[in-house]
Length: 187
Image (cartoon, rainbow, N blue to C red):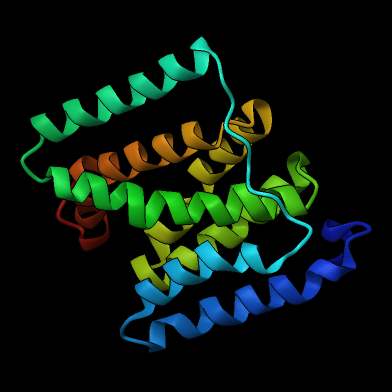
């Protein structure tokens, strides 16, 4: 792990605490609420960290509007989705996860591809106890995309909106497919 942390050994306790917390979460019935609170407030304990700045510009605004429009269209088209589910996916899943994993942890690990891989492994590890091994492991790949996009654009809102749209796509289509594959009923 020290190889991944480079010259940042002070991050070891944070990563250890995150791993222990993730391992214990399946034992607690209100685990999702605890996880959301930890993801939102843990970065605030680091006095040297600053929240990501919001980029300005037409390209960012167009990208945000496009993701919101795609999400709204998906919600309107898919019976499994609702406005409440979409708002919840944004506020209680995408926002706290991106706040912690990209806005805080990726930044604290110095960015770069090694940090993105490590953050994506941790991101997947947190999802396994909640969603099972296959969906949990599969979130590793979108996590790499979110990390790459955040490192490239520094647009926190863009990554949050993309993450929320990904969650909606998962609920609308991918979850059913995974259930069929795992249960052996076909795809």
